[in-house]
Image 1 (tube, rainbow, N blue to C red):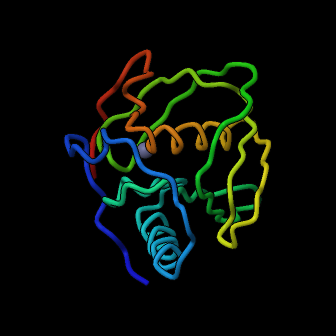
Image 2 (image 1 turned 90 degrees about the horizontal axis):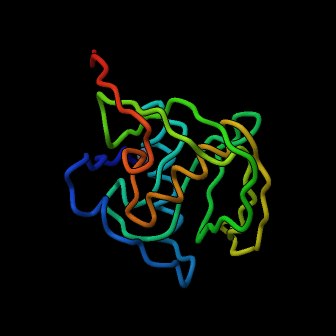
Amino acid sequence: MSVLKILKFGSPVLRTEASSVEKITKKTKQLNADMQDTMKAYEGVGLAAPQVGVLKRIIVFVDEEDYIRTLINPRIVKKEGARTDNEGCLSIPGRTGVVPRAFSVEVEALDLKGRKINLQREGLIARILQHEIDHLDGILFLDHADSVQSIKED
Ligand code: ZN
């Protein structure tokens, strides 16, 4: 297990569409473990594989009750409502944005064992899911933001 380097805004990888995972291998599981370590090390609430330079459709995020969940080939199948809130990104340090998103989402994906799962989440977790799934299509929160602020780094 190891903490991976997070690509920063400006890297073309972050603007590239990721490809579907066809087969869940040992390598997929290793990547998942490393992504979880990396997210924890940077105190993030979500991370998408392209952020660590891997153009595969895999995300990890902090789900309900602080459970860290991995989704493979996640797809939003339903969006409802709207909410605008602040958002940041480990790949865009020093900036936050005010970003309108759906209030609730339904997501279909595979888990690490290749089983189909269906999640319905609202509020912050729905926001994280929309943010991370956007990364798989090369989309960043800056693209949706109503406004972007600079914040001081410590
Ligand atoms: Zn992000």
